[in-house]
Image 1 (cartoon, rainbow, N blue to C red):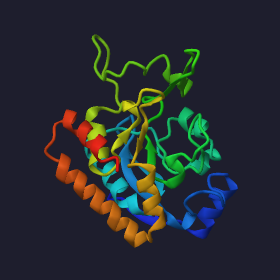
Image 2 (cartoon, rainbow, N blue to C red):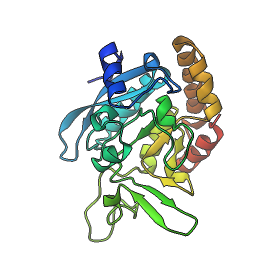
Image 3 (tube, helix red, strand yellow):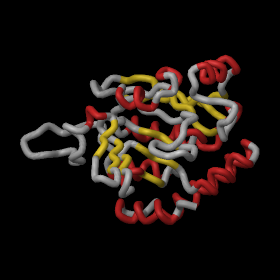
Length: 247
């Protein structure tokens, strides 16, 4: 199944508001969001349908990302919008839910998260946890169930079965080719293995100030330049491309 992209209906917007996923203060209005439905495999290898809500300009590329992940048989536990969790990022992570839009602040910060713009995606949080360290050296792992099993990032370990669903270099490259050039696994503090986002806040603000048509053209050109610069690159060079393309 090719990804299906649709505007949100007034009823869907109302449901998001009732669940606290979006408010009138959100930096992007509901009219600029799109619902992307796509096929994926679950951890049993069975076909499932997932849905992500993202900014209009990035929606076709999000569809392309998950089409590539499906072709690679990269499993997702599930992918449902945050209204299913009343906007709770913690509940979504605990359910190992792959998600995108959520009108919330950054974890541990006061500024809007890029999830509130619909330009960030979290993938398989259980297999790809968020790790922070405070000034006293105390480590926090979210979801907490990840701490015992997924801080080691190797897919293959001696005398142990291969672990599916971990974000690997190949997955990072797929996201980067479609404009999601920033991976939280490259950060120092926090480290956010589940998290992908597009370029700088200045670029995101440029997109939301434009009309949907203009924003789509701007983002398509951004992705074209990434493809031009990085298509023949090795995985190591892909990382350099990601840095260079953080407009």
